Length: 459
Image (cartoon, rainbow, N blue to C red; front, side, top):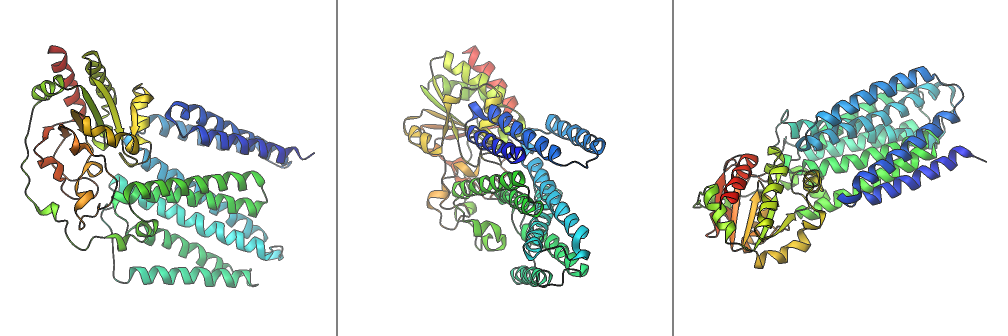
C-alpha cells in the first residue's frame, strides 16, 4: 500500500474541512488548527518517503522559520495583516520558483527533462517569480514605501504585452529542444520578475487588497505546478486548493467593490478620467461632542455600529464593545454592519470584533443589514468612508459608482467618527458628511468611544 499518497488524501480532507470552517468567525480558529494539522501530516509523510535526507538541516530550517513566523504573528497588528499576507504570498511564490529552478539546473545537462517537465518548470518559475515581485510591490504600496497612487508610464500596456510575448517565445524555445541554453532560462526568470512589477505598480492602493488576494491565488497555482515538477500529489492538492480559494476570495472582493477583475489587474484602465461631481461640492459639516452624541443615543431604541479602517487603526474593538454593552443595559438594540471590503480584506472587521468577544449573532453582512437602516434610530460610523458614501448610488462620474454600500444615510441620525476630513482609499469626498441627519465627532476612535462610554454611564 502507498502510505504516502494515503497520507496526502487524509491531508486534503483536513484542508477542505479547515477551509470550510474558516467561513465563520465562530469556527475559524478551529478550522485553522485543522488545516495546520493537515499540512503537518503532509510534511511528515513527505519526509518519511525520502531516504536520503539531512534531518539536521531540516530541523534547523524549521526552527528558523518557526521563530520568524511566531515573531511576525505576535508583533504584527491587525491593521498590518494585508501587508503580512502579501509578504507570505511572495515567499510562497519565491519558494516554488526556487524549487522548480533547482530541478531544472540539476537535470538540464543530461537530457532527462521531458517536454512536460520543462513546461511545468517554466510555469512554476514564471508564476512564482511574478508572485514574488508583485507581492513585494503590493507590500510596499500598503506600507507606504511606494506611492499608493497608480504609477503609470507611456506605452505601459503594450510593454506588458511585449513581456508576455517574450515569456511565450522563451518558453517555446526551451520546450522545443533548446533545454541546455541557460540564457533562455535566465531570460524567463528576468521577464517574470519584471512582469510582477509592471503589472502591480499601475494599481492604486485602494485595489491592493484585491491584488493581494489574486497573488495568493497565483502562489497556490505556482505551488501546484511545482507539485507536478516533483510529482508530489500533496503539493499538487494543496496548491490547487490555495489557488481556487484565492480566486474565489478575489471574486468576492471585486463584487464588493463593483469592479471587474480585468479592471483591477490592468490598473491603468481603472484610473478615472474625470472628477466626481460630488467631490467638487462644498459640504457643511456639523461637528459635535461625545456629550451630545450620548444624548442622541439615549433617545434611540435601535443602534447600528459600522466599523471601518479607522476603528482598526485605533484598536478600538474593545472600546466599541463596552459602548454597545452600555447601550444594551439601557434597553437599546445594537447591531454591527459589516461591509465585505471594510478594513482592508474580507473578514477583517469580523476577526477584529470577534477578538473583543462581540457576539457573532450581532454581526450582520451588507445583504442582511441594509434593510435594518430604514428603522434605525442612530448609525455610528467608526472610520468607514467609501463603503458608506451615497455617491456610489447616483454619481456616475464617481470612481465608486455602482459599488454596493451600507445605507447608513437612511437612518434617522448618523454619528460619524473620523480623525480628520481626509478622504478614504478612493480619494473622494464623502457627501454623507454634509447630510442634514449627520453629525461628526472628530478624534481617535478609541479615545472617542472611551469618553462616550463614560458619558453614557453618567446619563
